[in-house]
Length: 439
Image (tube, rainbow, N blue to C red; front, side):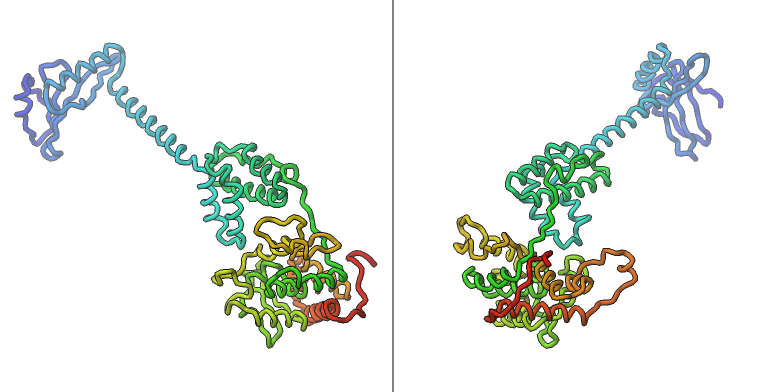
C-alpha cells in the first residue's frame, strides 16, 4: 500500500475519507498509523501502533479513535510498557483474561452466597419436592414447625453441625417424648441427605449420629387388653365422659382391628349397612392398600349407633367446625387423658376413668387386642394378617399369592364380634381367655 503524506493535525485526521481500498496512513508520531477500512468494509477508522519486542515487529490497535492527540497519549502509555519489556498487545489479552477470571470468581462467589439457604428454606424445598405424596405431610410440617424450625430454622444449612441437631433431640428427650425425638431425627436425616444430593451442602450433619444413642432404643408395644379388661372397659366407659361417637369409635376399632387414622378419616359413603361392610380407601390406609372389612353384628351395631348421633352427612367423626374429619390424634389424646393420675388444666376431671389393671393402653392397642382375640378363637395367622391389611413380608408370597381369603376374613370378624358381644353383654357366664402368650 503506497504511503501518503503523514497526518500531523486533528483537522487532517478528521478530513480523511474512505476509498475503495484499505488505507494505512502514517502520522507525525513514530510507529503510529491511521487505519481506514475500504468503503466496502464500512470505512471504519482506527489508530495502530507498530512496535518491536525482542526483535519482532508487532502491532496493536489503539482503543482511542476520536483524535490524533488522544491517540498520541495512548501511544505514550504503550511506549512506556515496551521500554519495560512488556508487550502491550499481550498485556491487553491478559487484562481481558484477568477481568474474565475475576468476573467468574465473582459470579461463583455470588452463586455460593445464594446457595447459603436457611434450614427453613430447605425444609420448604424438601416438602415441595419429595413429600407431596406423603399421607403424614401435615403431621411432619406440624412437628418441624413446633420442635425443629424454632431452634435451627434460621441457620444457614451449611452452618448446621451435630450440636444443633442434638439440641433439637435433647429438648425432646427432656420432655419425655423419646419416640418423637427418634422420628424427628430420622426426618431431619432425610432432609439433609436431600440437601447433599442437590449439592446444597457437602456433608450431612446427621450422618454420624446414631439414632439409638441420640434418642432412644425403639420400643415395640405389646400391650393387649385381656378379656377381663374388655369387660371392665365396658363398665368404665359411661363414666369417662366421652361423646357417644367416641365410645362407638373405641368399640369399632376393637371389633374391626382398623387403625385409628383409618377410622378418623372415614366417610359415611365408605359404610355399606346393607352389605355390612366398611371400606378403607387406599388413600386412608397406612400402607396404601384399599381394604374391605366385613362387619360382625357387634361392629354393625356400633356403626348404627354412630349413625344415630351423626353430626355430619360426610364424615363419621367430624371436627368441631364440621368442615373435615376429626384430627388423627384426637381419639388418642382423649383416651390418654383418662389414664392420668394428674389432672391437667383444661382437661377432663375423669382423668382415671379408663385406667385398667394391665397398665396404660392406646387406641392402637385395641387393634392388637382384637387380632389377639382372633388368634385365641382359632383364626389362622394368615387370615388375621389379611384382616389387619398387613403387607406380606415374604417376597415370594407377595408376588405369587394374591388370594384375599374373603370368606375366612368375614368368619374371623364374626367370631371376634360374637366374643365381644359375650364379653360386653349382661351375661356373666363367659369363660375368658388368659393373656396373650399364656396357654
